[in-house]
Image (tube, rainbow, N blue to C red; front, side, top):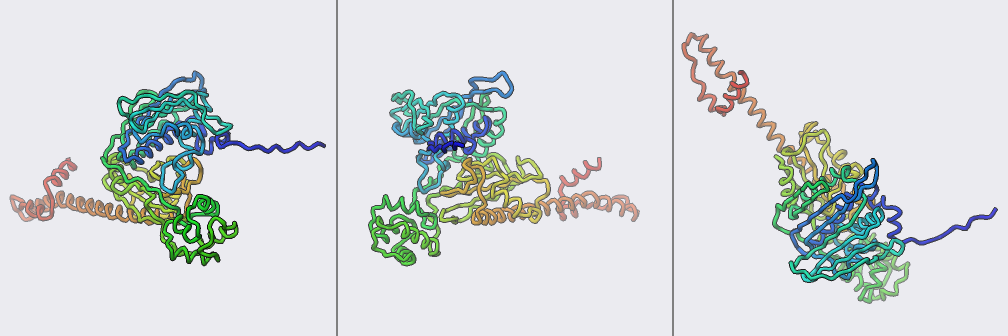
Length: 520
């Protein structure tokens, strides 16, 4: 029997995601349309935030080809325009037509994480329609760069169909992405509208307009005229690095000695700390860092883990929503009767800084339900799928007994959770559920319990007020009757005036009229 030889081959990142697009969330025409809109809107928000610009985002969806058969192909054109900082002309092909190429790999918070984002949306569009995408951008308000692009899946590089350099008489600056994709808008419409609504909650400084394929316009106006502080690039924290990271830092280091390298390459590492870590690793401070062996680098990583005296990571690479923005966003869309927002102090997990924010809203436009309305956000991104796999759901459903906080079984209650970090521990590449890391779970639990205690105080006040109103209603109903019956028993022609007594008790004309109406 002749054995068939095993064939070995290498594929590019583009080809990997071409074959496995479900991993990135592009699993169906409905989900893919939602993901495409989400990824491009996030790029637009990041582009505006980086330039401290109040975002103006326009999303247009039009149907280009409708299927006559059930389950047939429906082709849509998706166009997303923003007023951000734009993309340099020479970087546009790589930024939009190369998988795992981007500007979001530094040590700072960003909405995108894996360098997929818009590129994955364009790749999906190319796979399903075989049409090029058009990308237009200007960074200086003087020159507009217009590309028609496709992705070379085998080589993972851009294929430029056409390029134009145009004049910019209006001084426009920003980016426009226009491409075709197979989609199912009817099925995805509820999630898309929910995405825009939730994005407006955590980005109240943005003006977002969506025009759908049926000509319906959805506008979410700006309600805050202030740009949030953008995250700043920072050095990595020693607790969050591994051998590969150290090796890369060494390759680009300008410092020669080991002690100087540690101080220059990591945050929260001074001269004293560097010397203590080097000693713990069994190395010498003046060693040439470029000559460290693999075993010595491993010893250094082990010393990082055992040291235990590093200060918490620097929170400056983070840009949380902020209590003011979150409360304003929630009030503008849900108009609750009660709201309480908690923004926890920066903490860390695995050497990565993290800020947890939480809010509870009650009443207003929130629909009463047996199930709590949970709004989840990660780095200001709404998470709409895989809710029950998320750490927030675990805390809300398992860690908190809502009956202890006077919340009725059917209640108009909404819970908001926001996690900001340089590295969100997503469970999948689709970025929909956050893993239940103990540090994050603890911060969420503390924040939500504080919100719940304030809700309990509010509900207690309502309970007391309702009991008082009920008691006053009883006075308004029965005191006049008691006076009338007492006068008849005593043989008096006219009952005594009880109005002064009712007034002392706090009974108003409204209480009396309400009781008369109830009897009638």
